[in-house]
Image 1 (cartoon, rainbow, N blue to C red):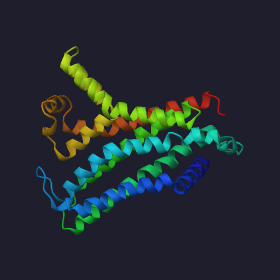
Image 2: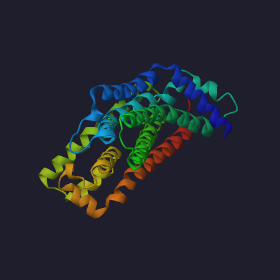
Image 3: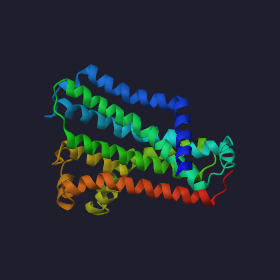
Length: 275
């Protein structure tokens, strides 16, 4: 555990020296500042106002920005170390492959999770100064959703990083994964529904296997427990899963999937040529 901590610490220091971390932190911090300037906490949309309105807008932006930022900044982690011979240098020390891999993963998780959660609590603090009420349950669930989405895309990124030897290829694959999860699956499912080739239940099941879709549904359920904004699909989801299990699924499933991809990445990392 000591070596894992040291590797994680080195990765955090490396991230702090890189420009991407400050861009990443500025994006989320800047978004919060923009929300404050635009007076979102004072507006009312569909009954949402104050902190609820702020969190609603912030979570919509997070769905788009957070996954691609995690992928493009993390996917070249091991691949770049391999190309620059840093991996060979690190393994010349008494550090096992297990300690190196999981140390890198923990260090990178800290750097991608910390700025987002800090921006969230800055927004909450600002809302409280404006006289808003503290929605503890909503903040806790939103923090859990952020943790889950960071976990799944970090696991996917490390899995890709262990499979390729060039960080350029890794970046291309990460962008492809993001596009597929964000847009292609929805378009494909709509096409299937229009052609009626498969049952609606199967289409919805496939959709919910997409971690981004699970995150979206969980985020919507935070602010709209009846899921009225997604139409008739809401009846099927709520009747089949229920609101409580739906929220648990939106949090637990991405975490499980992220750990699974991280484990597959570690297996590939051990069995493939390291250099």
